[in-house]
Length: 448
Image (tube, rainbow, N blue to C red):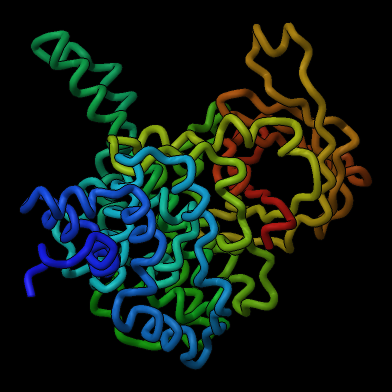
């Protein structure tokens, strides 16, 4: 029987089981098929349920998380409530794009990084971080090593590239060439920031679902040292591997190990993978770490996530800033870590976590808001503690996400300057006086 002989209801039922790209091809072949199947509710259903309908996808994923040393997934973790919410407010065109992005994610989750082509990663920053932030269940299939190669390629391009182009416009023969070069450099920086988001998300996800850090470290080590085939079980070997990975990741951080008072979002985002390896190499067992779990971070509540594709990488990179710099978001309980890099060639030191940071936040004055672009003041009543004792945080958060804080130990009298950026995973930055002491990262306690 021909498809054309079927009633519209049955045609739509059959179409629900097609990938989005196949359905788009189908409705171009015949007017009746177009009339019956070019339905936004149909594309919404495909976007919402494509992963569940992919043969073997759920079983393979559950089997992966049943392996020794992994934390089993709960059935509710494979639901996708954010997808339902996004579909309700999306236009028909955006719903189709969402369904297509879900298809791309499902295909991506079955590929090894070695099978990726340039075309696979060329526009990934325009759709994949969006689906991660929306907690699509197929994201449980992804590991951080999948993104290390394109991240490294973008990192090579971005190291001081924008500032160099601004300082050397005369190298271009025309003003148009100069503008094109600067625009290209800025776009590369945006893509680099989004790939940093992907690596941080998937690393946190893997750390939170793997009992032994050695398994996660091996993913990074095999990328940076392809001929390595050993098991990172012995403490000395594991620490050596961690130091090697940290060194490789440090090369990707523009202005690494320098005290920068106007730290950029790109620099802060690039520091997070290094921080994760450093923290986890010190606190190797999952139960001893206090780290956020992506599934517990309600990204959709504090990010104005743009529609996928539409060259939206730039919009995604900063879509968290408006809400995460607001006093009502910043107030509450935070925790975090800092690294100490002051000992030269020795391994990076990670102290015990900073805990019970009760952030007390106030609105800025009208003058501070309009003249200095201050969005929030961190009041001196903000206190927490770490292994050196109780401390106080005071400072301000600018509307563009730049954070300037002073950390003062109450009993010792010692104080440090923090300068950082608000990222989707919390506040990340550098600490020191006039010289670099290390990196810091604080995040909401509720995310742990």
